[in-house]
Length: 247
Image 1 (cartoon, rainbow, N blue to C red):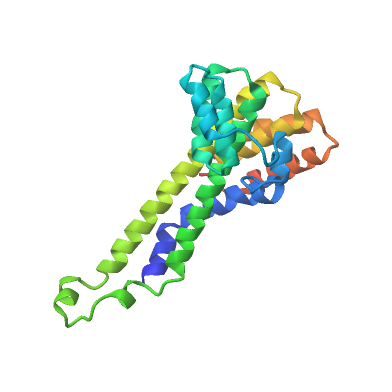
Image 2: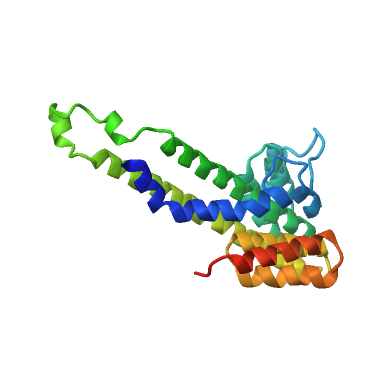
């Protein structure tokens, strides 16, 4: 059958998606639409209704004001266009590479993009598991087309397409968290005693499967604030990671 086969072949993708977002969404609100704990930790949050416009920022950039890439990123983010917000934000960081507060915001954008990729993967999974299999949609076996399509061919093609899409989403999700980790590391290098920042770094690193960086940041949280709620979360996550099978 198609779906048991799909589930077996794509099982590693689903396991990763479940594990990486278990902590991110419950504890940090990663990629939520706004107002979550993750936004608060990043120092972000929703802005007022009025804000920068894409067209105004683009005009400034065309006149040589490259700092306006920050305004452009804000405008795209306000419009819900994370891809363009990230692209503009990265351009701004080339102009202002030591704007660590905004670097933190761009890291949050990458986490938001990872959330979207997670959602797309969930939709892909639901679409496949809610269907009845390729044979339902196959033409009658006694027809010319039915004879041309060998039994199981549709199932095989659907399996390949679904696995390919899930693999692409998995790769993109990991890439998003990996870049967020890099940015958080740069910010943490500037503010090494920021407990909440260390927690964000640890979470992003864990979800990009960079366990050495994640563990180092979790231990840093415990060292900086041993009796805090953040330290309790860090200890819990360290135990969770240790309990996971290696490889």
